[in-house]
Image (cartoon, rainbow, N blue to C red; front, side, top):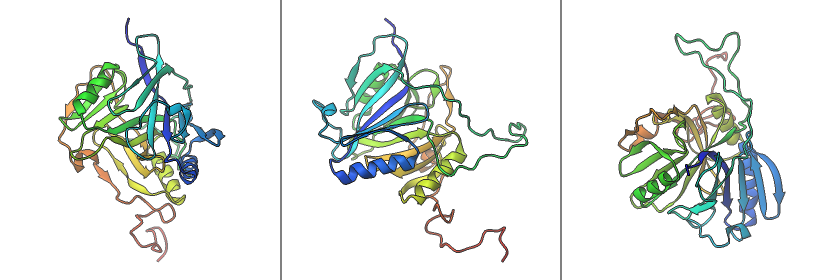
Length: 308
């Protein structure tokens, strides 16, 4: 029997730290992030992206977690549900070497007719008589990828390759970018082994339309009071633009746009870990949503177009 094709992430399930305050902050965070709250109960929150991918938030005592052990203490990611196309020999569920539970189901995601703004690079004009958009906030289209800290990179890579994942690029002995099918976005899972760093969640990326929505979403999160971890910026590996925020339900959340699209013809590259490999450029501390400047820059100055 051939393996079913994993299309991408259908659902993420987080557990809170068990407190009512964390449950409430997690709800507000994902509302501000731009997800649609489709179900709310005293012990469950369910959000959707534009294409129907879901984020589910539960307390750690919820029956859904019976028999499983979290990969780290506190609020964190507990389950990833992958959307599958076709039939094959994937299990209904399995657990990776970190204790993260994976489910597989016929994809529930729906087609969406949204499109990022075309760009006008020199010699290839694609946007004519039309300005690029300015977004007041982001509305994520889909869940892009998950990044995990691991203490045994080789074992973790073997697990995901056994599910049909394909290596895109790597930091030999330190990290592996894997995509869930031969053709698709640069990575759906990134595994990172850092000396002395315990296993657990690093971040989850949400795909938005274009770089303009990365900026619009990040500025809106800043105005809402959420703390930037790093960004906006650009990854040289994957080519994507990013903006990371701290998330009350564990790890970080990232706005992500314009990543590389790979096929079976792609040859994995090897890189040495370092700041320049993580970010070609990045703004430390983010941009203040009110002043449109770095938070450490004093407000009250004038823009160049203002009269002096």
